[in-house]
View: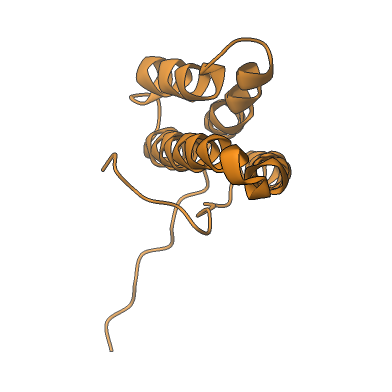
Length: 121
């Protein structure tokens, strides 16, 4: 049986930038589409620092794209009332999962968001 090489632990700096990729999504509470722009900017600036930052930046961006699409659909569904509940639910889930992802990234663990459409490869 072939032995696998141990996965190197990301440096403290790489873990912090990976965490910032996830937490940058909270810019969406400050300005429209900040949840997309924040992770995109952090990822683009720091993706060459470490493969861990690149991986987590893509994951954060993909999740925020998925959340934005879900919010747009929820807003359209406000015409039939269910959208009010869905928008609240999507927002709460997005906040909770972004916090979990940021904490995991800071611990050096790769985090894969559930319910995520992975567009950016």
